[in-house]
Length: 462
Ligand SMILES: *Cc1c(COP(=O)(O)O)cnc(C)c1O
Image (cartoon, rainbow, N blue to C red):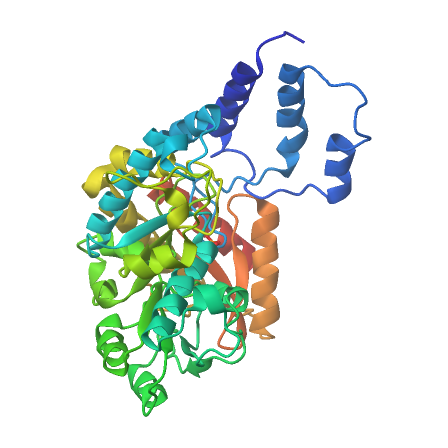
Protein backbone atom coordinates (compact mmCIF):
# COMPACT_ATOMS: atom_id res chain seq x y z
CA UNK A 1 0.00 0.00 0.00
CA UNK A 2 1.22 3.45 -0.87
CA UNK A 3 2.23 5.29 2.25
CA UNK A 4 0.77 8.68 2.75
CA UNK A 5 -0.11 10.92 5.63
CA UNK A 6 -3.38 10.16 7.45
CA UNK A 7 -4.99 13.48 6.53
CA UNK A 8 -4.46 12.93 2.81
CA UNK A 9 -5.83 9.42 3.11
CA UNK A 10 -8.84 10.74 5.01
CA UNK A 11 -9.47 13.57 2.55
CA UNK A 12 -9.23 11.19 -0.39
CA UNK A 13 -11.59 8.65 1.23
CA UNK A 14 -14.03 11.40 2.16
CA UNK A 15 -13.99 12.83 -1.37
CA UNK A 16 -14.57 9.40 -2.84
CA UNK A 17 -17.44 8.76 -0.43
CA UNK A 18 -19.12 12.09 -1.11
CA UNK A 19 -18.65 11.74 -4.87
CA UNK A 20 -20.47 8.41 -4.74
CA UNK A 21 -23.01 9.07 -2.01
CA UNK A 22 -25.82 9.71 -4.49
CA UNK A 23 -25.20 6.41 -6.28
CA UNK A 24 -24.66 3.86 -3.54
CA UNK A 25 -27.55 1.87 -2.05
CA UNK A 26 -29.03 4.24 0.50
CA UNK A 27 -29.47 1.83 3.40
CA UNK A 28 -26.89 -0.49 4.93
CA UNK A 29 -27.52 -4.23 4.88
CA UNK A 30 -24.45 -5.00 6.98
CA UNK A 31 -25.01 -7.20 10.02
CA UNK A 32 -23.31 -6.54 13.36
CA UNK A 33 -21.37 -9.80 12.92
CA UNK A 34 -20.02 -8.75 9.51
CA UNK A 35 -19.00 -5.33 10.79
CA UNK A 36 -17.43 -6.77 13.91
CA UNK A 37 -15.48 -9.24 11.77
CA UNK A 38 -14.18 -6.39 9.63
CA UNK A 39 -13.50 -3.91 12.43
CA UNK A 40 -13.02 -5.95 15.58
CA UNK A 41 -10.37 -8.24 16.97
CA UNK A 42 -8.17 -7.80 20.00
CA UNK A 43 -6.65 -4.44 20.86
CA UNK A 44 -3.27 -4.39 19.08
CA UNK A 45 -0.32 -4.60 21.48
CA UNK A 46 1.65 -2.26 19.27
CA UNK A 47 0.25 0.60 17.27
CA UNK A 48 -0.48 0.52 13.56
CA UNK A 49 0.70 3.15 11.08
CA UNK A 50 -1.68 6.13 11.20
CA UNK A 51 -2.32 6.33 7.45
CA UNK A 52 -3.07 2.65 7.38
CA UNK A 53 -5.46 2.95 10.32
CA UNK A 54 -7.43 5.60 8.45
CA UNK A 55 -7.39 3.67 5.16
CA UNK A 56 -8.47 0.45 6.88
CA UNK A 57 -11.23 2.24 8.75
CA UNK A 58 -12.57 3.81 5.56
CA UNK A 59 -12.68 0.43 3.85
CA UNK A 60 -13.93 -1.72 6.72
CA UNK A 61 -16.62 0.70 7.89
CA UNK A 62 -17.97 1.33 4.38
CA UNK A 63 -20.58 -1.49 4.28
CA UNK A 64 -22.03 -0.14 7.54
CA UNK A 65 -22.22 3.45 6.38
CA UNK A 66 -25.74 4.68 5.65
CA UNK A 67 -26.00 7.20 2.81
CA UNK A 68 -27.96 9.56 5.05
CA UNK A 69 -25.80 12.39 3.70
CA UNK A 70 -27.11 11.64 0.23
CA UNK A 71 -30.08 13.01 -1.73
CA UNK A 72 -32.49 10.06 -1.40
CA UNK A 73 -32.37 9.49 2.32
CA UNK A 74 -35.84 10.39 3.60
CA UNK A 75 -35.68 8.62 6.96
CA UNK A 76 -36.26 10.42 10.27
CA UNK A 77 -35.42 14.14 9.87
CA UNK A 78 -31.73 14.06 9.17
CA UNK A 79 -30.32 16.42 6.53
CA UNK A 80 -26.92 16.05 4.94
CA UNK A 81 -23.95 18.38 5.10
CA UNK A 82 -23.30 21.37 2.87
CA UNK A 83 -19.79 21.32 1.38
CA UNK A 84 -18.86 24.56 3.17
CA UNK A 85 -19.97 23.03 6.46
CA UNK A 86 -17.97 19.85 5.87
CA UNK A 87 -14.89 21.93 5.05
CA UNK A 88 -15.32 24.05 8.17
CA UNK A 89 -15.90 20.90 10.21
CA UNK A 90 -12.61 19.43 8.98
CA UNK A 91 -10.84 22.61 10.08
CA UNK A 92 -12.66 22.48 13.42
CA UNK A 93 -11.23 19.02 13.95
CA UNK A 94 -7.74 19.99 12.86
CA UNK A 95 -7.73 23.12 15.01
CA UNK A 96 -9.03 21.07 17.97
CA UNK A 97 -10.17 24.15 19.84
CA UNK A 98 -11.75 23.90 23.24
CA UNK A 99 -14.59 26.35 22.79
CA UNK A 100 -15.62 26.38 26.46
CA UNK A 101 -14.19 29.78 27.32
CA UNK A 102 -12.95 32.75 25.34
CA UNK A 103 -9.27 32.48 26.26
CA UNK A 104 -9.14 28.93 24.94
CA UNK A 105 -10.28 30.03 21.48
CA UNK A 106 -11.04 33.66 20.73
CA UNK A 107 -11.87 32.74 17.13
CA UNK A 108 -14.39 30.09 18.17
CA UNK A 109 -16.03 32.53 20.61
CA UNK A 110 -16.34 35.33 18.07
CA UNK A 111 -17.59 33.03 15.32
CA UNK A 112 -20.26 31.70 17.69
CA UNK A 113 -21.28 35.25 18.53
CA UNK A 114 -21.54 36.10 14.84
CA UNK A 115 -23.45 32.91 13.97
CA UNK A 116 -25.75 33.47 16.96
CA UNK A 117 -26.61 36.95 15.69
CA UNK A 118 -27.27 35.62 12.19
CA UNK A 119 -29.56 32.88 13.54
CA UNK A 120 -31.60 35.32 15.64
CA UNK A 121 -31.94 37.55 12.60
CA UNK A 122 -32.99 34.65 10.33
CA UNK A 123 -35.55 33.34 12.83
CA UNK A 124 -36.92 36.83 13.61
CA UNK A 125 -36.15 36.40 17.32
CA UNK A 126 -35.11 39.16 19.75
CA UNK A 127 -31.52 40.27 19.11
CA UNK A 128 -30.99 40.36 22.89
CA UNK A 129 -31.66 36.63 23.29
CA UNK A 130 -28.75 34.43 24.38
CA UNK A 131 -27.65 31.46 22.32
CA UNK A 132 -25.92 28.23 23.26
CA UNK A 133 -24.44 25.87 20.67
CA UNK A 134 -25.17 22.39 21.97
CA UNK A 135 -25.00 18.84 20.60
CA UNK A 136 -28.54 18.63 19.25
CA UNK A 137 -32.13 19.57 19.91
CA UNK A 138 -32.35 17.12 22.80
CA UNK A 139 -29.76 19.19 24.64
CA UNK A 140 -31.26 22.42 23.31
CA UNK A 141 -34.60 21.46 24.89
CA UNK A 142 -32.86 20.54 28.15
CA UNK A 143 -30.87 23.80 28.11
CA UNK A 144 -33.90 25.98 27.46
CA UNK A 145 -36.00 24.16 30.05
CA UNK A 146 -33.21 24.55 32.61
CA UNK A 147 -33.37 28.31 32.02
CA UNK A 148 -37.16 28.11 32.30
CA UNK A 149 -36.91 26.24 35.60
CA UNK A 150 -34.51 28.88 36.94
CA UNK A 151 -36.71 31.78 35.86
CA UNK A 152 -40.11 30.53 37.00
CA UNK A 153 -38.74 29.51 40.41
CA UNK A 154 -36.94 32.84 40.83
CA UNK A 155 -40.26 34.55 40.34
CA UNK A 156 -41.50 32.40 43.23
CA UNK A 157 -38.44 33.53 45.26
CA UNK A 158 -36.75 30.14 44.98
CA UNK A 159 -33.09 29.78 43.98
CA UNK A 160 -33.02 26.41 42.26
CA UNK A 161 -29.31 26.69 41.47
CA UNK A 162 -28.42 26.68 45.16
CA UNK A 163 -31.33 24.82 46.71
CA UNK A 164 -32.32 22.30 44.08
CA UNK A 165 -35.90 21.12 43.85
CA UNK A 166 -36.21 19.77 47.41
CA UNK A 167 -38.93 21.85 49.03
CA UNK A 168 -39.33 24.06 45.98
CA UNK A 169 -42.71 25.38 44.85
CA UNK A 170 -44.20 22.94 42.34
CA UNK A 171 -43.80 23.78 38.71
CA UNK A 172 -46.78 23.06 36.52
CA UNK A 173 -45.49 21.71 33.20
CA UNK A 174 -47.87 21.68 30.26
CA UNK A 175 -47.07 19.92 26.99
CA UNK A 176 -48.90 19.32 23.74
CA UNK A 177 -50.35 15.89 23.04
CA UNK A 178 -47.76 15.37 20.32
CA UNK A 179 -44.69 16.72 22.14
CA UNK A 180 -41.41 15.16 21.01
CA UNK A 181 -39.91 12.44 23.19
CA UNK A 182 -36.89 14.64 23.95
CA UNK A 183 -39.12 17.08 25.85
CA UNK A 184 -39.80 14.23 28.26
CA UNK A 185 -36.15 13.17 28.56
CA UNK A 186 -35.32 16.83 29.22
CA UNK A 187 -37.97 17.03 31.93
CA UNK A 188 -36.54 13.84 33.47
CA UNK A 189 -33.03 15.27 33.50
CA UNK A 190 -34.26 18.45 35.16
CA UNK A 191 -36.12 16.68 37.96
CA UNK A 192 -39.47 17.84 36.60
CA UNK A 193 -40.68 14.34 35.81
CA UNK A 194 -41.89 12.98 32.51
CA UNK A 195 -45.23 11.73 33.80
CA UNK A 196 -46.43 14.56 36.04
CA UNK A 197 -46.96 16.89 33.09
CA UNK A 198 -50.36 18.11 31.98
CA UNK A 199 -51.05 17.11 28.42
CA UNK A 200 -53.05 19.40 26.17
CA UNK A 201 -55.00 17.73 23.37
CA UNK A 202 -53.66 18.07 19.86
CA UNK A 203 -55.70 18.22 16.67
CA UNK A 204 -55.68 15.72 13.80
CA UNK A 205 -52.41 17.18 12.44
CA UNK A 206 -50.73 17.09 15.84
CA UNK A 207 -51.09 20.80 16.67
CA UNK A 208 -51.77 21.85 20.25
CA UNK A 209 -55.39 23.03 20.59
CA UNK A 210 -55.40 26.57 22.02
CA UNK A 211 -58.82 26.16 23.64
CA UNK A 212 -57.57 23.05 25.43
CA UNK A 213 -54.52 25.00 26.58
CA UNK A 214 -56.79 27.74 27.89
CA UNK A 215 -58.67 25.15 29.95
CA UNK A 216 -55.43 23.61 31.21
CA UNK A 217 -54.10 26.99 32.31
CA UNK A 218 -57.34 28.15 33.93
CA UNK A 219 -57.08 28.88 37.62
CA UNK A 220 -53.37 28.12 37.89
CA UNK A 221 -51.20 30.64 39.69
CA UNK A 222 -47.79 29.17 40.60
CA UNK A 223 -44.69 28.60 38.45
CA UNK A 224 -45.59 27.15 35.06
CA UNK A 225 -43.88 26.11 31.83
CA UNK A 226 -45.69 25.47 28.54
CA UNK A 227 -43.88 23.38 25.91
CA UNK A 228 -45.07 24.02 22.37
CA UNK A 229 -43.69 22.76 19.09
CA UNK A 230 -42.89 23.89 15.56
CA UNK A 231 -42.60 20.87 13.29
CA UNK A 232 -44.33 17.69 14.40
CA UNK A 233 -41.92 14.83 13.66
CA UNK A 234 -44.59 12.96 11.75
CA UNK A 235 -46.72 15.59 10.02
CA UNK A 236 -44.50 18.70 10.12
CA UNK A 237 -47.44 20.60 11.62
CA UNK A 238 -46.72 23.67 13.75
CA UNK A 239 -48.51 24.68 16.95
CA UNK A 240 -50.50 27.94 16.59
CA UNK A 241 -48.11 30.09 18.61
CA UNK A 242 -49.96 33.28 17.85
CA UNK A 243 -52.85 31.95 19.92
CA UNK A 244 -50.74 30.02 22.43
CA UNK A 245 -48.32 32.83 23.35
CA UNK A 246 -50.91 35.25 24.81
CA UNK A 247 -52.47 32.43 26.85
CA UNK A 248 -49.10 31.52 28.35
CA UNK A 249 -48.32 35.18 28.94
CA UNK A 250 -51.64 35.83 30.70
CA UNK A 251 -50.96 32.88 33.05
CA UNK A 252 -47.39 34.08 33.72
CA UNK A 253 -46.07 30.82 32.25
CA UNK A 254 -42.76 30.40 30.45
CA UNK A 255 -43.38 29.40 26.82
CA UNK A 256 -40.79 27.05 25.34
CA UNK A 257 -40.80 26.10 21.66
CA UNK A 258 -39.26 22.88 20.37
CA UNK A 259 -38.50 23.91 16.80
CA UNK A 260 -35.92 21.27 15.92
CA UNK A 261 -36.65 21.63 12.24
CA UNK A 262 -39.90 23.65 12.13
CA UNK A 263 -38.28 26.87 13.37
CA UNK A 264 -36.39 26.96 10.06
CA UNK A 265 -39.69 27.71 8.32
CA UNK A 266 -39.31 31.18 9.85
CA UNK A 267 -36.41 31.83 7.46
CA UNK A 268 -38.66 31.54 4.40
CA UNK A 269 -41.09 34.27 3.33
CA UNK A 270 -43.22 31.52 1.78
CA UNK A 271 -43.38 29.31 4.86
CA UNK A 272 -42.89 31.60 7.83
CA UNK A 273 -46.63 31.99 8.44
CA UNK A 274 -46.47 28.55 10.09
CA UNK A 275 -44.25 30.05 12.77
CA UNK A 276 -46.29 33.21 13.40
CA UNK A 277 -46.07 34.25 17.03
CA UNK A 278 -42.78 32.42 17.60
CA UNK A 279 -40.98 35.60 18.63
CA UNK A 280 -43.32 35.92 21.62
CA UNK A 281 -42.04 32.74 23.27
CA UNK A 282 -39.40 32.68 26.02
CA UNK A 283 -37.10 30.00 24.63
CA UNK A 284 -36.51 28.12 21.41
CA UNK A 285 -34.67 24.87 20.74
CA UNK A 286 -33.57 23.98 17.25
CA UNK A 287 -31.12 21.92 15.26
CA UNK A 288 -28.46 22.95 12.80
CA UNK A 289 -27.64 19.35 11.87
CA UNK A 290 -31.10 18.75 10.44
CA UNK A 291 -32.40 21.43 8.08
CA UNK A 292 -29.35 23.69 7.97
CA UNK A 293 -27.38 20.66 6.77
CA UNK A 294 -24.27 20.87 8.92
CA UNK A 295 -22.52 17.75 10.26
CA UNK A 296 -23.57 16.22 13.57
CA UNK A 297 -23.51 17.30 16.47
CA UNK A 298 -25.15 20.68 16.22
CA UNK A 299 -28.15 22.05 18.09
CA UNK A 300 -29.00 25.58 19.19
CA UNK A 301 -30.60 26.73 22.46
CA UNK A 302 -32.01 30.26 22.42
CA UNK A 303 -33.34 32.04 25.51
CA UNK A 304 -34.95 35.48 25.68
CA UNK A 305 -34.09 35.92 29.39
CA UNK A 306 -30.33 35.74 29.09
CA UNK A 307 -29.86 36.24 32.84
CA UNK A 308 -31.83 33.07 33.57
CA UNK A 309 -29.96 31.23 30.83
CA UNK A 310 -26.60 32.21 32.28
CA UNK A 311 -27.66 31.52 35.86
CA UNK A 312 -28.59 27.97 34.91
CA UNK A 313 -25.18 27.12 33.47
CA UNK A 314 -22.40 29.49 34.43
CA UNK A 315 -19.51 28.10 36.40
CA UNK A 316 -16.75 29.95 38.17
CA UNK A 317 -13.51 28.63 39.56
CA UNK A 318 -10.23 30.22 40.48
CA UNK A 319 -8.44 28.82 37.44
CA UNK A 320 -11.07 29.93 34.93
CA UNK A 321 -10.25 33.19 33.20
CA UNK A 322 -13.62 34.50 32.14
CA UNK A 323 -15.54 37.53 31.04
CA UNK A 324 -14.52 41.07 30.20
CA UNK A 325 -15.10 43.40 27.24
CA UNK A 326 -17.90 41.51 25.56
CA UNK A 327 -16.09 38.18 25.47
CA UNK A 328 -18.27 35.14 24.98
CA UNK A 329 -17.57 32.27 27.33
CA UNK A 330 -19.59 29.50 25.73
CA UNK A 331 -19.84 27.43 28.87
CA UNK A 332 -22.15 30.10 30.34
CA UNK A 333 -24.80 29.01 27.82
CA UNK A 334 -24.45 25.24 27.55
CA UNK A 335 -24.46 22.23 29.85
CA UNK A 336 -20.99 21.34 28.58
CA UNK A 337 -17.72 22.65 29.89
CA UNK A 338 -14.99 21.63 27.45
CA UNK A 339 -16.56 21.42 24.03
CA UNK A 340 -16.09 21.23 20.31
CA UNK A 341 -16.07 24.53 18.42
CA UNK A 342 -19.29 23.63 16.66
CA UNK A 343 -20.03 27.22 15.73
CA UNK A 344 -17.56 27.05 12.82
CA UNK A 345 -19.64 24.75 10.57
CA UNK A 346 -22.83 26.64 11.44
CA UNK A 347 -21.13 29.90 10.50
CA UNK A 348 -19.81 28.39 7.26
CA UNK A 349 -23.21 27.00 6.25
CA UNK A 350 -24.96 30.30 6.90
CA UNK A 351 -22.31 32.26 5.05
CA UNK A 352 -22.32 29.88 2.08
CA UNK A 353 -26.11 30.05 1.77
CA UNK A 354 -26.86 33.62 2.76
CA UNK A 355 -30.36 34.68 3.76
CA UNK A 356 -31.77 33.79 0.34
CA UNK A 357 -30.01 30.46 0.24
CA UNK A 358 -31.38 29.37 3.62
CA UNK A 359 -34.91 30.29 2.52
CA UNK A 360 -34.39 28.53 -0.82
CA UNK A 361 -33.19 25.37 0.95
CA UNK A 362 -36.32 25.33 3.11
CA UNK A 363 -38.62 26.11 0.18
CA UNK A 364 -37.01 23.48 -2.04
CA UNK A 365 -37.42 20.73 0.55
CA UNK A 366 -41.07 21.71 1.11
CA UNK A 367 -41.75 21.81 -2.64
CA UNK A 368 -40.14 18.40 -3.06
CA UNK A 369 -42.23 17.00 -0.20
CA UNK A 370 -45.34 18.24 -2.01
CA UNK A 371 -44.08 16.69 -5.26
CA UNK A 372 -43.55 13.38 -3.44
CA UNK A 373 -47.08 13.55 -2.03
CA UNK A 374 -48.49 14.31 -5.49
CA UNK A 375 -46.70 11.35 -7.04
CA UNK A 376 -47.68 8.96 -4.25
CA UNK A 377 -51.32 10.06 -4.30
CA UNK A 378 -51.43 8.62 -7.83
CA UNK A 379 -50.32 5.18 -6.61
CA UNK A 380 -53.35 2.85 -6.35
CA UNK A 381 -54.22 2.23 -2.68
CA UNK A 382 -51.98 5.02 -1.39
CA UNK A 383 -53.37 7.63 0.96
CA UNK A 384 -51.55 10.75 2.16
CA UNK A 385 -52.40 11.09 5.84
CA UNK A 386 -51.16 14.59 6.61
CA UNK A 387 -51.48 18.10 5.26
CA UNK A 388 -48.06 18.52 3.65
CA UNK A 389 -47.27 21.92 5.14
CA UNK A 390 -43.48 21.57 5.45
CA UNK A 391 -41.07 18.75 4.57
CA UNK A 392 -42.93 15.75 6.02
CA UNK A 393 -45.18 13.28 4.19
CA UNK A 394 -47.12 10.42 5.81
CA UNK A 395 -48.49 7.66 3.57
CA UNK A 396 -50.55 4.54 4.13
CA UNK A 397 -50.99 1.80 1.53
CA UNK A 398 -54.02 -0.46 1.13
CA UNK A 399 -53.41 -3.82 -0.51
CA UNK A 400 -55.37 -4.11 -3.80
CA UNK A 401 -56.92 -7.44 -2.87
CA UNK A 402 -58.06 -6.22 0.55
CA UNK A 403 -56.33 -6.97 3.84
CA UNK A 404 -54.67 -5.07 6.65
CA UNK A 405 -53.30 -1.70 5.47
CA UNK A 406 -51.01 -1.54 8.51
CA UNK A 407 -49.20 -4.77 7.75
CA UNK A 408 -49.12 -3.94 4.05
CA UNK A 409 -47.67 -0.47 4.65
CA UNK A 410 -44.97 -2.04 6.80
CA UNK A 411 -44.24 -4.53 4.02
CA UNK A 412 -43.95 -1.71 1.47
CA UNK A 413 -41.50 0.13 3.76
CA UNK A 414 -39.36 -3.01 4.09
CA UNK A 415 -39.34 -3.54 0.31
CA UNK A 416 -38.30 0.07 -0.31
CA UNK A 417 -35.50 -0.24 2.23
CA UNK A 418 -34.27 -3.45 0.61
CA UNK A 419 -34.46 -1.99 -2.89
CA UNK A 420 -31.97 0.72 -1.89
CA UNK A 421 -33.09 3.46 -4.30
CA UNK A 422 -34.12 5.52 -1.29
CA UNK A 423 -34.56 5.01 2.43
CA UNK A 424 -37.48 5.89 4.61
CA UNK A 425 -38.97 4.52 7.77
CA UNK A 426 -42.27 3.89 9.42
CA UNK A 427 -44.24 5.43 12.23
CA UNK A 428 -47.61 5.09 13.87
CA UNK A 429 -49.95 7.97 13.23
CA UNK A 430 -53.23 8.14 15.11
CA UNK A 431 -53.12 4.43 15.76
CA UNK A 432 -52.18 3.09 12.37
CA UNK A 433 -48.80 2.33 10.80
CA UNK A 434 -47.63 4.82 8.18
CA UNK A 435 -44.65 5.39 5.92
CA UNK A 436 -42.82 8.53 7.00
CA UNK A 437 -40.93 10.63 4.45
CA UNK A 438 -38.81 13.62 5.38
CA UNK A 439 -37.18 15.82 2.75
CA UNK A 440 -34.35 17.61 4.53
CA UNK A 441 -31.24 17.27 2.37
CA UNK A 442 -29.65 20.23 0.57
CA UNK A 443 -28.76 18.08 -2.46
CA UNK A 444 -32.12 16.42 -3.12
CA UNK A 445 -33.53 17.24 -6.55
CA UNK A 446 -36.87 16.72 -8.29
CA UNK A 447 -35.23 13.85 -10.19
CA UNK A 448 -34.37 12.18 -6.86
CA UNK A 449 -37.99 12.49 -5.77
CA UNK A 450 -39.29 11.13 -9.11
CA UNK A 451 -36.91 8.15 -8.90
CA UNK A 452 -37.81 7.50 -5.28
CA UNK A 453 -41.56 7.84 -5.86
CA UNK A 454 -41.24 5.32 -8.70
CA UNK A 455 -39.38 2.91 -6.39
CA UNK A 456 -42.07 3.31 -3.73
CA UNK A 457 -44.84 2.77 -6.32
CA UNK A 458 -43.07 -0.36 -7.50
CA UNK A 459 -42.82 -1.65 -3.92
CA UNK A 460 -46.54 -0.99 -3.42
CA UNK A 461 -47.36 -3.01 -6.54
CA UNK A 462 -44.85 -5.81 -6.03
C1 LIG B 1 -35.06 15.67 16.06
C2 LIG B 1 -35.97 16.34 17.03
C3 LIG B 1 -35.57 16.54 18.35
C4 LIG B 1 -34.28 16.00 18.90
O1 LIG B 1 -33.20 16.56 18.24
P1 LIG B 1 -31.75 15.88 18.25
O2 LIG B 1 -30.97 16.81 17.42
O3 LIG B 1 -31.95 14.54 17.64
O4 LIG B 1 -31.29 15.81 19.65
C5 LIG B 1 -36.43 17.24 19.19
N1 LIG B 1 -37.60 17.69 18.75
C6 LIG B 1 -38.03 17.51 17.49
C7 LIG B 1 -39.35 18.06 17.08
C8 LIG B 1 -37.22 16.83 16.57
O5 LIG B 1 -37.62 16.68 15.32
